[in-house]
Amino acid sequence: MPEDRYKGWEVIRPLGEGGQSTVFLVRSPSRGTKRKQALSRVGDLISGIPNSALFLENISEYIHEDAIDELGALKLFDKARRFGAPPEERIRREMDILGEGHANLPKLLEGDLEGKWMVTEYFPMGTLDNSPERFKGDALGALKAFRPLVGTVASLHSHLIIHRDIKPANVFV
Image 1 (tube, rainbow, N blue to C red):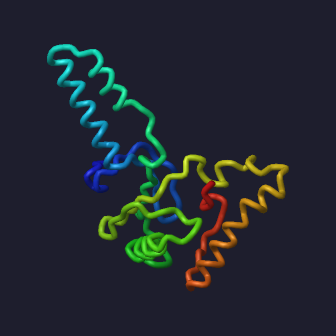
Image 2: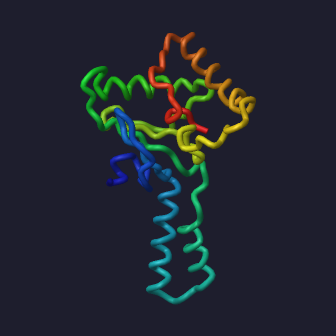
Image 3: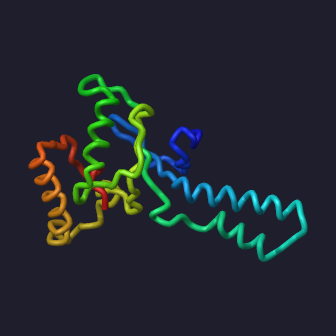
């Protein structure tokens, strides 16, 4: 996938897919630029006079593990549905809602209505669906974790917004 299609967000790997979209882990444009610059400098150093300290510094910049704020989740609205709103309408609504900054919803980092994609913050621990053992035997812990979800849904309802697909695969940890 060409990264310029997503305003510099670099696709790293698939995260999953649902009935209307496919989601990928992506690297931020600023982190991608730093990596490209470091790799370019490494190439320059290899072809020029060796400078081991500068070489190691640039290799380190290129390979260091991405920080959470350097990552995002790219959601492509790439699946046609037989019933319901077209992808253009679905992404517009979702971007509008996420852009309002409701508590306990992912933060919208960037998006493109015409391209039918958006990037939200990334949750490295995944969803409740990915971690069924997380609250096994801990009913109180599960209820405490579930409480913010109930509050978020109530808040959305007060704004006349209905989420019709609440399930473990859509609840981020």
